[in-house]
Image 1: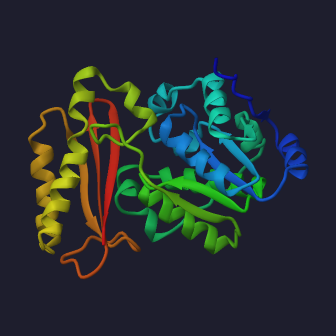
Image 2: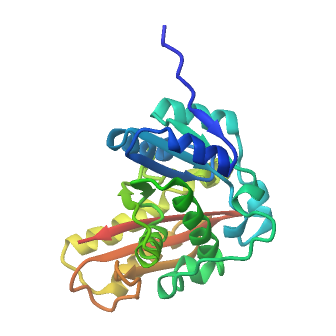
Length: 284
């Protein structure tokens, strides 16, 4: 009979988090989440557990990074299940604050990163990254962790957070972690549970589109417009897929490329009804 998983300590206020961290063994690894945890999150927690004596997971559905109120309200929430996932993956403590602990009364500060936030997700979701960088700056400051772990699926977000941490002198090392996928190639996302069965069957088209462009690249094609067109043609063959953007960009600046002379980042955002999915593939 399997032994029960030890649940991590749960703290809900800044003061309690400060006290818990004062007694924690160093180094501390941080994993920031919005809950609805899946195997992708668990893989981040396991990496943090392998590297650090203490693992802190934060669960906070951040209202400032949603462009649509309905999307915020529909975001899945199951605290008990999330805490179990954290425990099974090796988390030491979980910070689950109410909104007023993250944004206290009178809060009026925001953190904005410049050019990196303007294309791709920034163009499709105005204000999104300001919400992300503000909350991540708060959580990095509260945690004071030696390392923080972020998934490569949100490639632009990872780049933006690294820029923010460097610019603000936040000493936490930002660690990139590989994308975790379903057997059919769909990148794990908390939004996947909102797909209808028909949409779920169609969603692996993102991975097929990226793989088709990767195959052209591996065959020697370095024309960025051909790679973008390859992705678009693959997506167009799936009636339920409504692309917002496809990109072949410089992985450091996110500027769209004409011709590849070095590394590049293929990325896309695609809607299936009300559900918006993203994915990417680095080329080097």
